[in-house]
Length: 137
Image 1 (cartoon, rainbow, N blue to C red):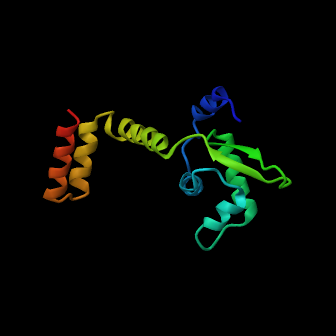
Image 2: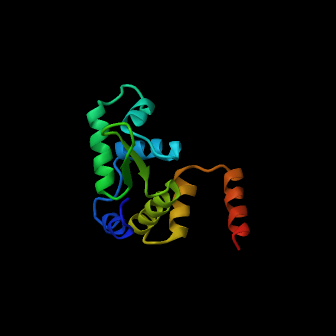
């Protein structure tokens, strides 16, 4: 398994943001929950399916970025089982913090204001948001 130190170092790299395809691979792994080999991931990819080598390359990149670890599967030759080192919630939290910092100057109020105005929330949705803020107090 990848050490926590190496994982943290990799996560601090500038290229730790997931590309669209990397995110799709991670979503598959997060949905599977107990790890998967490249073939398992390929089976769950949408059509047109990528080549096996493409999936393997993305898994290698995700490993190098610190998102995955792997181990060999006993009795299955060179097959590796990949497991996420970062949960979907952790990635979402970190991504939203970056969005808040980079686009809204770190202001939650500015970020929420943007979504209220740009997403044309219904009065009901605004009411639900207000209720959520009251619940958090």
